[in-house]
Each structure stands twice: as structure tokens, then as C-alpha cells.
Figure (cartoon, helix red, strand yellow):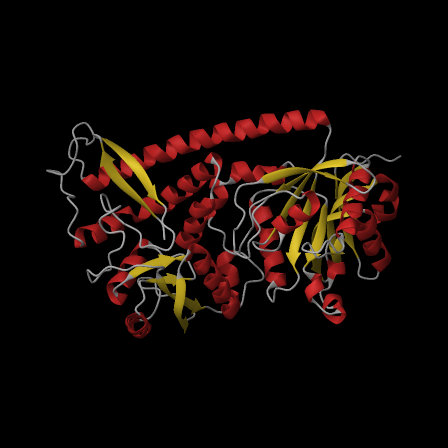
Length: 488
């Protein structure tokens, strides 16, 4: 697992982000090597870490309110996803402990009796760490480590760890480090407490510092906080430079007049497999979460010969850490600047609806405006005809069943992309409220327009998207909002 650690080298504070796959992480200054393989009991380990997963089963209503989602994964599916995240990070899962509560305990997350049960499971299984399927406060993490007697990692830290392992480009590494340090800063005092227990800290104002690195009366903890804040500011400046570079590249791309199509979707839905099928690109395709982190762009020919640029972007996930969304905004601008989105959906997933909802929520959080979208229901080759029909594809914008691994349905998907791009120049953004009796108009909007958002209430179906001008008169009685609409 990863830890961002602060150390002082050569007389100046520097931030060191250690990336260790399947090895125990260090958590304090100077522990990068000495404690990398040390357990809390003083023994050493080799091989992957052994993890126990832990979660609170909160009521559906409470969870939805907390995370701002109308649909959340059921506990067993959320734990299955956490299991896959843990394996992707390089650890092995040796047990699970859950507790049903109306809300997590503010100081310990789990109740007292459940903490004792968790401690027993950790000892019986010889576990090195416990991974919680939620974000813990620094106080909760400290109290849990004291009660359980091993390292505690939350969902956010786990995802950050995976991103750190997967970042290959300098841009990706900058963005991951920024997210790590933003996560670390409010937890730094707790890490120093842990470090002092291991006998390595010198946190008082009278020793352990370097000349010219400590202000009057500053403790080492304050020095480290200042160093992290300075590093965060520097990283933000560099990422702004990355964003400016991408903006210039996009401007040159616009001058070439080549439309941009972005692949979006839940992690492991098959975006990279689709990109490889379409372009033959040598991109990483693994059955792991977040196998793709750095965006890849390739040129693709549509059925009638039109050229487009196809970009594979990082996968989304439920409760994607806010720090990651903010840090990766420069990369995710590729989605915002695309002319069309292909939403790749894992049609085999039992959590398909929740995953689709999660992607939509993340796009909203990124303030991605209404864009034409094709919904590619992937992996239909693994489903029966009845199962495909049960997907309810017609409820989504421009649905196309595909099998990215075999190429089934891919040509039909590209034809749909081509039709949308052809009509885009003559399309305008509209919002309509259609009564349920107007099923023919709903069907017409889905077939001829592109739906960005679709909601329902007792009065009917609300659609927002792009509609060719020639169909506007049919929808005019139901218009809620229009932009730049003039009568022909």
C-alpha cells in the first residue's frame, strides 16, 4: 500500500511519495526503508499484505443522502468491488467484517463489540491491515488502529494507492501526488503519533530539525505541514501548465476540424478493450479496476470514411474521492471538450444501474454540459437473448449492444456516432417536458436527437439534449428551456 511521507533531506523539507505494490507502507519521516516490512509486533513479512475488509451497512436512505446518489450499491456488491480494489492494489483478502448501524460511530466508526470482533479476526487470519469501505476521519482511524492493533486503511487511501501504481505519465504522477497530499494533510498529526510509537519521532521544538528549515518555535509537525502546503501549491501550478498545454493542443485539433469522441464509463466496463478493437492500439487491457489511468487518443475511421479522434479516459467508480476528481480535472477536461461521448456500460454487472448512475453523477460533478451520447452496452455476448432484452436499453440515449472483445455490434455503434455527428451542426440544445401519453415524441427524440439527461415526475418525462431544428416544431408546445432557438 502507499503512504505519502514527509522527510527532511539535504537541509530542506521534501515530500517523498513511496509507491509499494503489495508491501507494507511507511507512515512517518525516515521510515521509508527501515519499517517497510515491519509489523506492529516487530516481526517482518514477505509477500503480499493480508487484508480484512470492513464495512457498515447503513440504511439505503441514509447512504443515498450522504453520497448524493439516488442509487447506491448494495452492501454485498460494494464489498465485492472493495475486494477487487484490494486485489488490484496488490493485497489478498483473508476476511470480512460488517455491522448494521443507522450511522457510523463518530469516534470509532464501528461499535465497541464489533471492534473486538474485528481484532479477533485480524489475529486469527494473521492480517496486516484492515480496509474500510468508506472514508474515515483521522480520529476514527487512530482509534481503530488502537482498538484493532494493526494498520487501518480507508477506501479513499486504497483508491489513491491504485492510482499511484497506475500513473505512467508525468502528468498522471503529478495529479496523483496532489491528491495524495491533499488527503494526507489533515491526517499528518495522526501519522506522527504512529511514528512516535515506533520510537522514531522528534516532534519537539528543540531537536531533530535541519538548519534553515524550521521557523521560530515550529515543531517538526508544523514544518512538515508547511512543506506539504508548499508542495501542493507547486503541484497545482504545474498542473495548470499541463492544462494550458492540453488547451493549446485542443485548439490545434479544432483547426484540423476532426471531431473528438471520448469513451467514458465505470471502471473495468471495457473502454480500453473497445479502443483496441477499433484502432489496434497497444493499450493495456486487464481485468482489473483502473487498469487505464492516463488518457490515450487514437484516430478512427467511421463507416462512411469520416475521421474522428477517440480518447480513452480514466474509469469512474462510486464515491470517487473528491481530491481525485479535483486533481484529475486537467485530464478529465478531455471529456468536457469532446464532441460526443460513448458511455461504455458493463451489461453483465449485477450493479449496472448503480454504475450508470455513478457515471452520470461524476459527469455532473465535473460540470460536463449536455453532450450527445451513445450508450454502448458491452459484453452482451455473455448474455442470453432474454437477458439482453431485460437490460431496458431503450431507456438510455442512443443504445447499442456491443461486444468489444469480439467486435460484435461495433460497426452499428460507429454508424450511430456518424449519424449524430452529421446532424450535430444543425442541432440545438433543448429541454422538454413530455406527457407520458406522448410516447411517439419520446421515441422521436431518442431516435433523432441526443439525450444528455432524462428524469421522470408525475407530469411526465423530462428530456434535455440536442435536437435537430427540423423536428423543433413538433416539440415546441412542450419546451421548457431553449437556447438560440429561432423560428425558421
